[in-house]
Image (cartoon, rainbow, N blue to C red):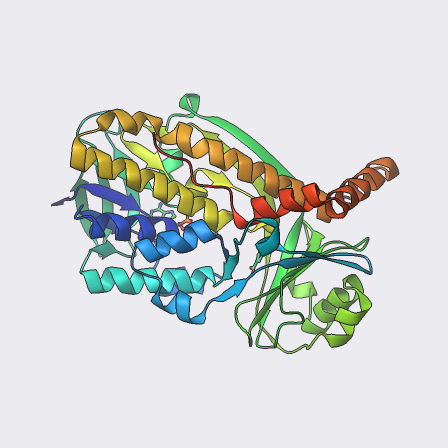
Length: 397
Ligand code: APR
Ligand code: PHB
C-alpha cells in the first residue's frame, strides 16, 4: 500500500470538489482530490447553466473567472409564460441591481480543472473503492485503488464532494442522519442544440400540457426542457416530437420564432428534493449534491454547492490560520439555513409551474391563482426575483 498525506482530502472532482480545492490551494492549504471517473466523463455530463452573483464572485475570488467574464451572458431578467400570457421578471430592477450569469456548469468545471492542472495540485482520476475512515478520530484517512495499486491518504479533514450517489454520505452510520425527501411524479427531458435562443432571456412556461423551459448556453447554443412522466423513455422522443411538443407549450409568438435543429444531447432527469441532516460527521463534511438535491426549476443545485464550498472554505481558513477549530462544528448548521431556503424556493417554483396529474381540479386552480397573485403583485415579483438571483451567503460568525 502506498501512503500519501494532505491537509484536506477531497472526494469528487465535480464543481464542488474542484472549487473547494482551488480556494484552499490559493490559501496555501494542501488538498488532494480522488475522483471515480475520467476528466472526459466528468465534462461530458450536461448540467445546469445559471450562476447566481454569489457564485460568480466566488469564482472570481478563486481566480477562475477569466473565460466566464469574457463569454458568459449576464441576464437581468427572465420570463414567465402562463399559457399565452408573458410576464417579465425584471431581476435587476426588483433586486436593486442584481443579475445572474448564463455559463454552463461544464464550462465552470473545465475552467476549474485547467486551473488545478496549472497549479500543479494533485487529482487522482479513475480511483476506485474510495472509502473514508476514522472520521470520528483526529487522524482520518481515505483509502482507494488506482491502476491496480492500493493507496492510503492521511489527512486532517475529508470533504465529501462526491454528489448524490457518492460514498461520503453512505459512509456515515444511518442512525446519525435524518433524511428529508420528496420525489416528483415527473422528469425533465432536455435537449442541447446549436440553434439561436428563441428569446434573449430564459422562458419558464406553465402550460396545461406540462412545463417547458427555454434556456441557453450561448448566443448559438440552446438548452430546452419539457416536463415528461417519470417513466418516459428518451428513445420515444425524436427531435421532431420534442420540437412539436415544445411549440405546443409556448405562447404562439415564441413558438412561431423557435428555430429548430438536430439535438446534440438528449436525456431525461428525474426531479427530487432531498436534504440530509447534519451535513457533517466528525471530520467528514458533506458538500453540494452529496448533502442535498433540488429540482432544477429554480436553477439552485450548482449555486447551493457553491455556497457550501464558501462556508467550508471560510471555516477551514480560520481553522488553519487562527486555530479556530470551534467553528468546525457549526458547518452543517450554517449551510442548512441557506439550503432549506433554496429547497423551499425550488419546491415552490416546481409546484407552481408543473402540471400535477394527481392534483384535483381545486388544487390546480389554487396553484394557478397563487402564481397569478405573485406575478401581479410587486411584492410577489420581488420575492421571486430575490430568491432567483440568490439569497445572501450566511456569515460563519
Ligand atoms: N469516489 C470518488 N468520486 C466519486 C464517487 C466515489 N465513490 N462517487 C461520485 N464521485 C464523483 C462523481 O464522479 C462526480 O464527478 O463525485 C463528483 C460529484 O460531482 P457532482 O455530482 O457534479 O456534484 P457537485 O460537485 O456537488 O456539484 C453540484 O449540483 O445540482 C447539481 O448540476 C449540479 O452537478 C451539480 C451539483
Ligand atoms: C439550464 O440551462 O440547464 C437550466 C436553466 C435554468 C433552470 C434549469 C436548467 O432553472
